[in-house]
Amino acid sequence: MPVISRGFTGRGRRDVALPPGQYLTEDFPVLSAGPTPRVDTGTWQFSIVTEAGQRHDWSWDRLMALPAESVTVDLHCVTKWSKLHTPWRGVALDTLIEDVESAADYAFIRSYGGYTTNLPLADLLDGQAWIAYEYDGEPLHPEHGGPARLLVPHLYLWKSAKWVRGIELSHEDNPGFWETAGYHNYGDPWQEQRYYGD
Amino acid sequence: MAGTAVLRRLSWQVGTVAESRPETATAVTLALDLPEWTTHLAGQHVDVRLTAPDGYSTQRSYSIASAPSPGRVEITVQRVEDGEVSPYLVDVARPGDELELRGPIGGYFVWRAADPEPVLLVAGGSGIVPLMAMARTRAAAGSRTPMRLIYSVRGPEDAIYADELRRRVRDDHGLDVSYAYTRRAPDGWNGVAGRVDAARLGAGGWPADLAPRIFVCGPTGFVETVADLLVDAGHDPGRIRTERFGPTGG
Image (cartoon, rainbow over all chains, first blue to last red; front, side, top):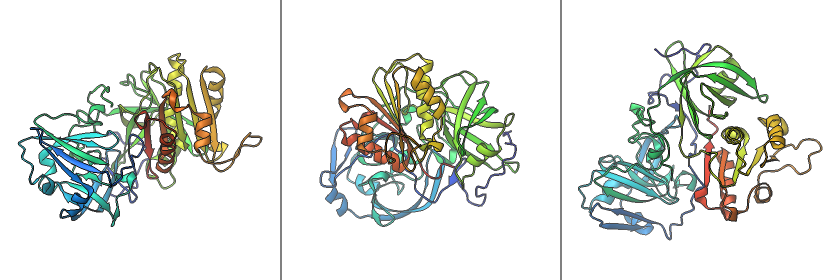
């Protein structure tokens, strides 16, 4: 039985279906563990390296030349805020991975600035993930991960690595930055998988 | 980079408010009795869950203000005017009330008394809370690690823990505190009002070649500005740890 907090009525919306423990916000908070890296699109590079060591690289121009998608998705941050109907533009991981030969089960994401995160490769496919470079019709601001970030909206937002620079495919699941610091390895907001053991 | 957290399941605990202590006109410290609480690291936070009689519940994160102490945790809460949880914790919660809590959470924005490097803490507003836990933990451990705090507040009346910080500067060897008053400096203060800038970080901080550990906590804009200034001053971005909170901290 939950403990009822005396005198607490709660003003939060009861009519919006949010994952458990989340509250609705209209603005766009920023959560990062360190300074915001400044990444120039002139030198920006994105790579996918397979479990066999095969490397596929994209320059900014190559990324821009790929077919892009506009998507509107809900964001759920482990720090409790949710933001609904956010408009992004980017390249689907399906498009990037089309010519990559791999039988790997896991993806390890690396970012400029040293951030890392991990997730099953299956969660990056089938229209579930993008390399996003526009937000609300504007180039993605560095505070929010620009020039390009991973967008995996069905998992808590820390999986949507800002300043993304590469994906390593592997047969092994190697925990990333927050995953080794006590956060959940998978991070499904609807299962409230915030922390280790949830 | 992290990898040092002890991984164990975090269960909800029932905490009882032992004390509600005003810090400023808009912030209180809640001391919570938590029989199952063992310890935490300075800089970690807790999740607080409030449940209404109709079953509606909501959660927020709050930094721990206190040094480790079995069975007891203190959080300091700044009232957010249109917030849902903070006005309750500041204005309504009183000794004897129960709320649910779990933690400690976060294995990166933490300082350990055994860390030998000099420390720079830069706080904006209620961003002082986890940094105060570091200053308190340092004292509790009898550490002599040089620690400097630069604390940005609008005016002197907004400074949380002002009396305790004054006392600690006197008693805790190797702890220095300097203020940046962004709107109104106190009478007789030897300086001008203004935001934290490169000059203030230089005067109140450490040169980059000493490779200090740096912790910056405050509103997003403040943290972005300070972190950029520190990088520009030559500090290794990998040594600058940040904690940002938005206006919807609730």
